Amino acid sequence: MLQHLPEQGVAYPHRSRDYFIAGFTFFCVGVSLVIDGSASLTMQNILGVIAWIFLLGLLIGENKEVRMQVFIAVAFATAGEHFASIYMEGYTYRFENVPHYVPPGHGMVYLTAVALARSGFFQMYARKIAIFVFITGGLWSLWGISGIPEQGDQVGAFLFVIFVICVLKGRSPLVYLGAFFICTWLEIIGTAAGTWKWASIEPVFDWTQGNPPSGVAAWYCLVDAVAIGFAPKLLMGLQKLNYWYKTTIAN
View 1: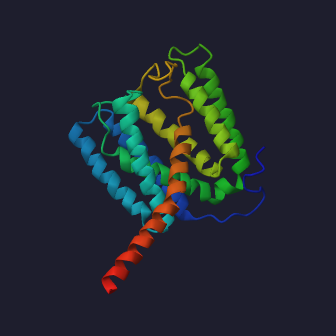
View 2 (view 1 turned 30 degrees about the vertical axis):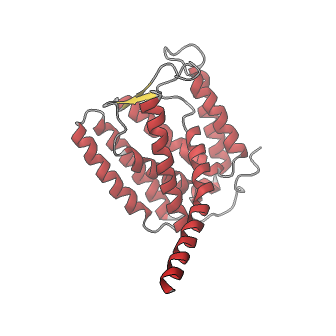
View 3 (view 1 turned 120 degrees about the horizontal axis):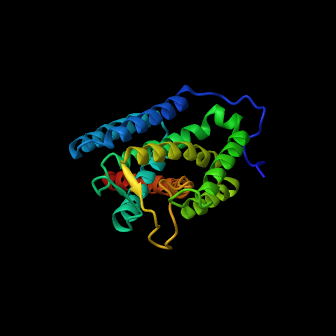
């Protein structure tokens, strides 16, 4: 079932950059969300400026394809935020907006998932990590639909099933596993700090929804699919445009 994951017992290389990106993002997410839990709108905007600086700094040293993936992920996830939060009201931020740090935050989260996926640790222990995530997420999902918690989580259980399928059948299973850790981290801290709150009833199918939903990392499977799918096409388009421009100027 997990044969498509990297082979065990191989000495995969460790890059300090990958661990720095992950550690730095986990730290920034925790601090910024706790601050925003009680901060003013001005402070929230300042966090946005800082987040953009951090994201651009982290992208230094990445290749063109990863940078393009990050920018696509930012654009797609930001559009999704406005649709799911502002329009659908599936979850709501403190000021009923989409904070300015959210777009670059999505970029940092996506880059962290990529960094974890290519890290020596994730490649070396991919199958054990997958089993841990399946068990942990599965128990969380079962808890949400058990009837024990006051706020049920049918949405989370459904999303977790989608997430498991993506890990087993998708083209970037390690990225999805990395996304599970950083997404779970930010969702637990963000909701606990009161930075945002998920609606108890999902607005489309009227399913119960946890705060946060257990399988929320599944959304990043979609973000990853869009980013990986469109990045090569956009890069090729930019190359053709650059060639056309140079040819036109030369003539």
